[in-house]
Structure formats: C-alpha cells, structure tokens
Image (cartoon, rainbow, N blue to C red; front, side):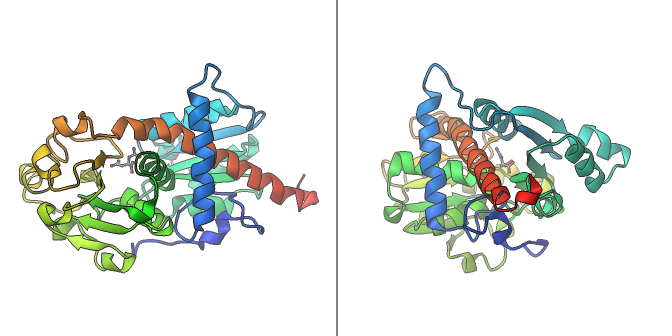
Length: 334
Ligand code: NCD
C-alpha cells in the first residue's frame, strides 16, 4: 500500500458526519456502515417490486468515469443511478480524450462545465478517486468504483450485505479471504469493512508471493495452506488472480495455483458444513474456483451481483443528500 497518496478519510464526510463522497471504507464508523447496509436492504425490497424506481436523484446527472474496463461494476452503477431516476452518462475514458493526450484535470473541467452532480470513478492508479474528490466543486459527489490496488468500497459493502443476509451478526463469524491479496483492492476494503463491523475472525489464505508485507497489521490471521485456513470458517471469499497487475511471475503456474488454492468441493469440505462461497467476479473457472462450487448451492456469487445494485443505490442517495445538507450550510454556493 506504499504507493498510496491517500487523503484523510474525513474528506468523505460532512461536518455532521454524513457521507458526501464514498472513497474508502477505512476510517468510517460502524454506525455509518450499518446505515449503508440498512438503506441497501430497503432498496433490495424495492427491486423485487413491479416499479423499480424512486425519485431520489431526479434532475441529477451521474457520470460514470471508467478509466479501466468493467462489466458488472459499471452496469450495476448505471442501473442503480437509473433506479434513483438520475440521468446517466457512461464515459469509457480509455477510448476517449485521455488517449488523445487530455489530462485528468482537463477532463474534469469539461465535465464540470456540463454541470454533473456525481462522478463514479474507476481508475488503475491508487488514489485517483481521492484526487478527483479534491478537485471537484463542493457540490459534486465522488464515488470510488475501484482505484488501483487501493480500495473498492462499494464491492466490500455489497459483500457485507450478502454476508449479513445469509449469516446474520458479524461477531459470530470466521471469514477467510483467499488468493491474490497482494494486488486486490477488494481484499483491502473487505478487511477494513469486516473489522469495522466486528467480524469474529478474519483470515487470509495465499502463497507468500501474493501476500502484502505486514498484512498481519490489518488484524488478520495469515495462512498459507487451505486445509488449515479454511478449517471451521463460515464464509469463504475468493479473489481473482490480478494478472494485469503482476509485473513479474509470482506463481509457478495457474495449474499449480489451482492445485493448492483453487476452491474445489474437496477443499470446501474443510469449512463448516453450511459455509457460503463468494467471489467478486469476474471468475476464472479452473484457476480460482471449480465450476461445481461456483455454480453450486453454497455459491452466493449471483446474490453479490444483485446486491451490488442496492448497495450502490444506497451509497449514491446518501452521498447526494450529504452534499445537499452541506450546501445548505453554505448559501453562497447555491
Ligand atoms: C473486482 C475489481 O474490479 O476490482 N471486480 C469487480 O469489481 N467486479 C475484482 C477483480 O477484478 O478481480
């Protein structure tokens, strides 16, 4: 995490502690995370109804600024914004002006001139969403949709919602996060969220080459073997091998990784009999996970996708209302 040029978490809160940007889970209170989960729960109920829209973001413009490829995160942010009645613009920056040499600041100024109200940002550099939050006008909310290997806070919160729905109180749970911890923004955000929500025990399982140094300082137990690491866990959270972020060969081969760390039904047998399995996607079958597990009765992978919409609706509506209360306190901005 040394590459981080991290602004204090407090830039994401209003003076009264409401969310106005969502950049990282780190430093937020248990109350605020629980409010996100409770708000998301109400949107889960709404999504099951015939009419799936509420007017909370009516008249607002949300810009999805994706500097890095994405399928499920981008589409669930888009659906979330539409279900909140916002106007939505998807900008795939890798194929637009930045490839013509425009700087990030110039892109932001152009978008500012279009009076956007919220930026949802995905970028390959750690700290990109913080940078943007520091450079937008005070009435624009910024949501981090994944920055480098730093954070992916909405993914962590949709994972927390999925765990809470299936397992209840975090205090009673043993949870294992398995695989490429080193390059994973998802793992970092999951660990912060689980700590804040008071998870009973957090484990990471990975080969030495895929573990960040000093990971124990995050309050996790480290295992290098699945047999010991999965013993008696309630939740197994798999990660994708982030090959695009590996500069050197960190693994002998994918086949070797699968043999030692791939989640098969045989290895899942070490966990509790009712343990559930999660993966943020995209999954690599036969690399991180066996199809029989990914598509099996204990897999919550599709529940995670569905919950992504509700969590993103919750975060977007909370950040927008945080922005509005802040602006009301500064009448000169209106
Ligand atoms: C994750 C991401 O992009 O960080 N995926 C996602 O958001 N659905 C995990 C990954 O790409 O491995």
